[in-house]
Length: 238
Image (tube, rainbow, N blue to C red; front, side, top):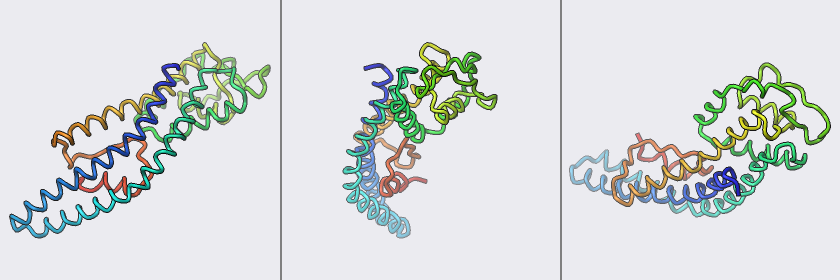
């Protein structure tokens, strides 16, 4: 398994860890809100007490409904595993078949939509190497003996190049500067999961130690599409 394939498999571990984190976050916020509720009642701060009581009720209700998220996560992990295998095929370059190319670019698009904006900005901010402007750097698996045109002048960064390649159903040839630039973009997207795992693991350790700040903003890359998960992240935040 290549380094790129290994990095992409971290997305599956990230998806599983996200559910564990969201459940732990709901429990931690609920316990914190309960303690604040008791303190507010003791101090006679009834408005604060009512607010904390509502927070506790909403968190506990959302936590109960997370059963569905746990069920869908298994399917999500399977899809991410399949997409990881497909997008890793970019390393085969011009040896890809048309069907493999279609699956590869489709999988890339899935990951591209999940990454934080900062990662896309990094890819957009990477200018093309001079040799990446040459049509000879690319192949069309549908016409292996054919030649590809030069990318248009409007394609002036790696993100735009990948968009052009997807639209034309081309792939960069192995060993070219274009190939290295596209592989670099895929690697940047793959590395998001490892960074996210480290962040979530650090937050879980803080919860175990009772030092996690429930007021801090929570930013989760590729957050599962769950109303309750989003509510748990939001509740208790300023």
